[in-house]
Image 1 (cartoon, helix red, strand yellow):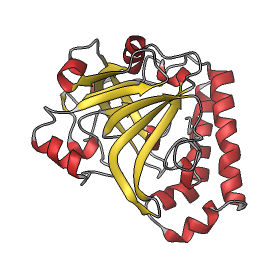
Image 2 (cartoon, helix red, strand yellow):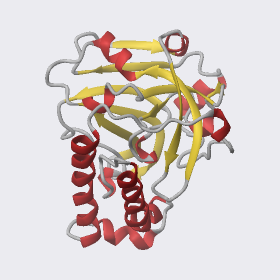
Image 3 (cartoon, helix red, strand yellow):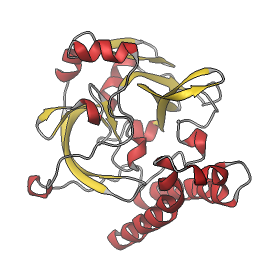
Length: 263
């Protein structure tokens, strides 16, 4: 099984990073590849179904991502993507050390709730040392501490038709015809309840830095790094993605990348 996982990582790094990774860094030459009907885009969409089916069928829905020892943390966690959102709300909260921050959890739930940072830190926690694999081809081992998402879900009681958890974030990716384009991400309920899926508020035995997603970021360890949404302020449980932006379930999926992104 470990040999299979290694070969699959190579496939994702070479295949996805070769095209998708360059686009993630802002290389405009790849934009035509992400348009509907282009063979690269079609390949990436096909790979999405393949990775999800392989991981769920051969590795099991409860399989765990590898965890590491303290001695294997050899560098700081590399910041990537947005590193300091400049929206007015985020800047206001960060200036107050996020003392006024609240996480909203709503959508298809029986009991919508909101939690401040102190409440989240006082909940049952999980600490895990895992490897962050970026679609750009680099990886980094870090220690993450946070509240299991499953614990939050138990409190809000998802409705039977809740199929996905959507993470709405403070960082804005640009401005389109309909206004600002916020970063958002989603996972299905299998990954939402996975024990290694946490809302991290700590990294390497310290408070989560702003450049790494403070005050709260998602860690979903069986998927590529761009699934680990940073600057999360709201979790919305939904039945489908049809009402969200372009309807593909995440900012990058809306731009041609695979939604599942399993490793």
